[in-house]
Image (cartoon, rainbow, N blue to C red):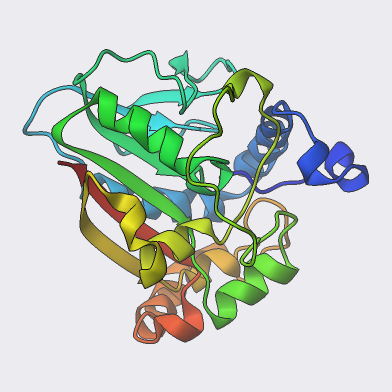
Amino acid sequence: MIEASSPSSESVPLTQLPLTQHNDEISLNLRSWEKKPLLRKIYRGFHESIARHVRTDIGGVTAELGSGIGNIKEVIPQCLRTDLFPNPWLDQTEDAYRLSFKSGSVSNLILFDVFHHLRYPGTAFEEFHRVLKPGGRVIIFDPCLSALGLLTYGLLHHEPIAIRDEIKWKAPDGWSPDGDSYYAAQGNAYRIFFQRQHKDLLKGWNVITKERRSCISYVASGGYSKRQLYPTQALPLMRGVDAICDIAPLLFATRLLVVLDRE
């Protein structure tokens, strides 16, 4: 989850920041992770939701792209933790546009708060299609736009929603990820997977699951960069609030879970 903002991100427009901004934010997030037991409990629940969709019956590698602080192994021990930049807790470095895995060798690719950082998601999906086995899965966990989601990500988060910006599905000829810079458009996953006008972008993929979740327990936890609004021991009560609010996703959804498999 890339959430915290660094001094450099406060003084320079996000579109002008280098890719290393991702690693700067990971360092800030790690401090909050170590200080906030509530955050660790909530993320464990998120990872358990993801684990229920991981295919274990077709062999191959399970890998998370953009692992950040790399805690997913607590729930999915076999998962390779990867990111653009090396860190002691990660297994290897990977770029979503240029994966090192052999063709047809991967069973699951997990993108937790990564999809909205893909400037050209269709180009990344071509690479996903190459490395996945037939029936292999891409599991996406990302921001979701609703009335509460727009408030949460539009007013309380430093990254843009970019809901009116053009989604550039494919990279232009001659583009290379080597020259890429920091990119974020928090509304992209919602627009592509929950708005009908973008369904033609998903040729070659079967949508297995689409879920919208309120996750108010997470919002009120303050995440990595805001103040915690309830005591850690009240998490079971807040999860009950989540279950009630899940009934009205247009009002309360702040997270989405999408599972695709390779045709």
